[in-house]
Amino acid sequence: MIDRTHNKSLRSWVESANRHGADFPIQNLPFATFRTADNEEPRVGVAIGDSVLDVTRAFGVKAMQYYMAATKSDRVALRRSISDFLTTRKPGAQALLTPMDAVELMMPCPIGGYTDFYSSIHHATNVGSMFRPGNPLMPNYKWLPVAYHGRVSTIVLSGTPVRRPRGQVIDAPGSPPVYRPTASLDYEIEIGAFLGPGNQMGETIPAGTAPNHIVGLCLLNDWSARDIQAWEYQPLGPFLAKNFATSISPWIVTAEALEPFQCPPDPRPESDPQPLPHLDGRSNEAFRIVLEVWLRTAAMTEPVKLSSSLFDSMYWTLAQMVTHHASNGCRIAPGDLIGSGTVSGPTKDSRGCLLELAWRGAEPVELPNGETRSFLQDGDEVIFRAWCETSTYRRIGFGECRGVVLPAVDPVQDSGGEDPMKEILSAMARFNSSDTS
Image (cartoon, rainbow, N blue to C red; front, top):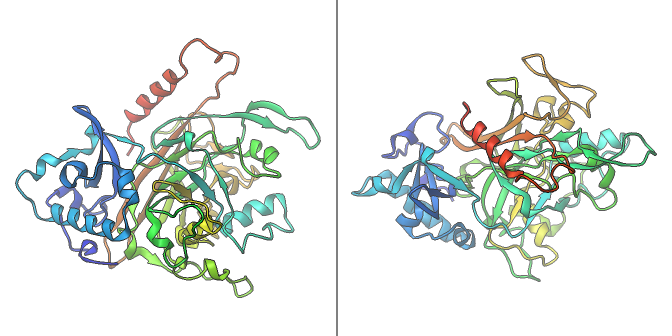
């Protein structure tokens, strides 16, 4: 429901939120979990300009999992209260703000389950045509949102370096596999959706109510080792090629903030089947979100944009994913996370991963400094950005999702001795202190 919180002319007493092009104006109000040096207790915060409002102190929201479990109407009411608080300054209000550069952002909430989908028909067709030129899409693709269950233990926050994984790869058809670092490390730009309040085991989530269970969205990088994936994925799908790392951005842009940017998804061709009745209805709501991929190699001082895509080009919507996920009685719990799958469009400059952009290495991406990339190299930093904007409503942003690639660990040298986290923490400090404009 669009209300006074979406008014384009609304301004906050936090002046940094009123700057043109700011990711976090008062019309956004994304949530995160944070702590400060003088108070290490995790709290719920809302981004406003270049500051964080302590929602735990101001409104009594103890933790993000309680927010995830709330009903849609309760989330709407809280948003209105926060908006009113930041519109009209009251005595003592400034004390509830902390500069964003003085807070430590944390994982938004405990994530009980993570499922990643494959919902861009452009991505699925591109990838399928590389391996099955005559029949790129599997028979089920246009009937249901395809997905696999990911690994919660390796979901990390933006800024956490990602170690190049090792795995079994095949050098030539018919040859035995070898165990080594992946030579085909890739990113995949996705939207992540945090869910709640969910359903009980054995119950379903009807298409008409599925949007109420989408709490908010973030950016998600489904890191992928393509050579490991090519060997292992049949017959049960992705495993070690993807579960080594998944990066998410810290700010959850609420479904309520995104309501002005809802739109119909791209129309299906008349020759395509219509969704089965249980997948049809209000679940066809999409979001017009612009997503960008940027890359900074170790030799660069500034990142370069690789691609830009639109989220409403997806074949299946987030609400349809939720309905399908619960259609067999699977329980969806507050704080569960789903990934949309790679967001790719119909043109080359809208492809959402290097596998597509470089077409499996046949067309290496040329960078402005003379370097080329077919897949990621050690020291590369991948940066995702996203926003929504129309002529009627204020621009709102998602912040960034960043990750730098570290070299693979030698399995012999790493069997004891020094803590391997030291190198990771050192790299994090180095990149956090660098210019990230």
